[in-house]
Length: 247
Image 1 (tube, helix red, strand yellow):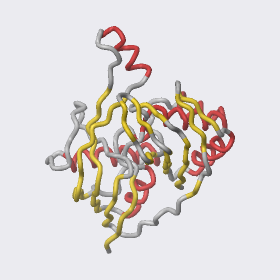
Image 2: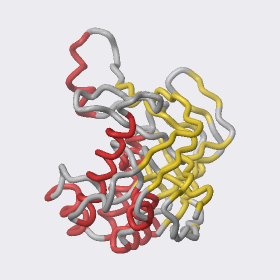
Image 3: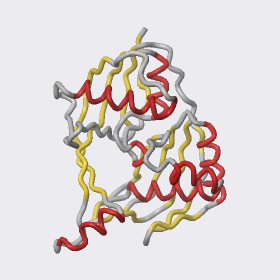
């Protein structure tokens, strides 16, 4: 299941990803408090079964803020219970607040999902992919380690969702991937760095966006398309769309 949610907003922080997490959490809590508690408290450390992407319309960056006309959020997941709770929660709230930012929700639109039947698929990243090694070092697509690390995350994503990993290892071919450095922050990091004496500290993630060809079992490819493929998928990384399949 996949849908898009438009928000009318004139200004958002440059580090806006945690704002999206806040909207999702608030919506789930509003729809079903017990479900929210299970997902974000009882299973706090588990990977979340969704990915998100954002399109910002007519942007202009001024220092730590982004001026814009509209924010369009895409949410994707094979978990229908999650998506129905999220949809219902979003419907119950027309206006969201994150710190000093106010967002007016528009009409939610469902997007028809692609049904993958081939073992070879060309994907486009709707949100950048964050692939790091065990030391937290970002791995670029042209690295010899990239396929291995991407397979690690793919296996982890599937195990977290369905209890079993990849049917078979993915063959990975980056077609056109560009580097994107993401600036972010959160309350925990801000509190830890508040005494550093350098003002507000920021987190930086080196991610990549573009086109990526994956060859594997169609069942794996379908779930990765729906769940996303990346580290930090719940924070606007790794959302995918299908460009084409090859038989």
